Length: 217
Length: 392
Image (cartoon, rainbow over all chains, first blue to last red; front, side, top):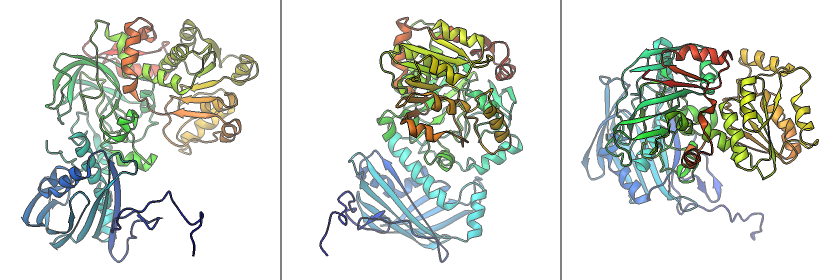
């Protein structure tokens, strides 16, 4: 069929490549994958006013991830493309710590990183892509993450302040703030008067009991 | 230190709390020399803004002396005198670069709360609920100021605090309201609400070329101040006064070129709609009482501009959008992009073009603040503006 002005969409450009985290494929908007078969998906993106190479390097430096990812205790590189991650399961300093191994599946400097867990307490996979912003100012960072978790557990996590989907969104927010400003804004340690029972309940339900990563400070 | 804490709806207490400490590398600690109660603080006092927590330190209008700076603060040092804008901006995100400072991407640690309510989050604010960041405010002896390289305006003259304090919010807010009103030389501008923001909107409308300003309120002390600036006043509480008729009469039947709603979500009305809004908000069926907004949409001329510096928080009922569409009006609104206005307005104060301290009616201590919230809310003692000396 010959193309006509009605079928051509000159204003919709494909991304230079198509990956799991792509938002536009063949000119069509692609919604994030649906949660099913015990898998949860989250896709989120942010415009960061930094060069893609700088952001790639920051993301790829896995041992520095606890500076901007919530609840992480430590990440240790165990080989080329493999690392061991440990994370707290709640907001208390003495809470249970879970660990897992992770391996990098794709590593294209300045373009994308994909990874998956290869054993341990967590079953997840993810990808981050770095694209030039449409108007050339800054880099669009898109994260797609997939993990397995029961609905009940997800609901419970929401109640105590942070479900894992929201954690992915918050972590990208922290990443952007750290990249753009050199710090992650925090208000949890500001002085205040007596919170009382209701105040403390609100803090928890607003996610304010999840310690904001320090950004390396 | 001492600080004014929100302890629940209609409950403020002056408490002793820990001193703030440096947390991030771009922080500064300010020793507050003067602070003020803002009309928008009354929305918190009355419980209209959600996500307040007991113990929250109030206050977003303050100035003082730099006490301590973080390692990355390069343009301030201990002892500098500064006025601090109520919006916190990082200076580095796409919105700050475009000078939409109040839309900063990075300064609200609780952005997810605002995203749920508004779609996207704006900048963090001092002492203005956890949805707006959960930062402690400046009705205190000390306050932590994030991104101190970007916000605080250094005062390098010997003008007294009272003449420059209002650069922290209400003077720039009134000025941006007049700018948003898109005033052309010779225009007629109507301003609802002659409180502090309304006052500065009136003064700024004249600065931007308005030929006439019509000021609407019900309190004599405020209407007197408005007339002292050159405005024509309309007291809507007087018998036989209809605001819409008055504005028509005063504009040759055309309507004001621009209308400014400097009242916001707790508007009072002596019409039937006033009772309607009180009942609906009491039943949690609407969150705001938009009677001024409705009236301003009705009043503005065809193709005119409606500027809204008054704060709205949530869902509004019976807003005559058909009238807005039918007349093809423009509406502009939002939190003030403070950083654009502080320096130019300081220059106007330095040149003696305006003395913002003319609106001050009460000078108090931190211990007197809780009682003054009540007095201002109940519209007693002819309050126009309350300034606090945290060390008195």
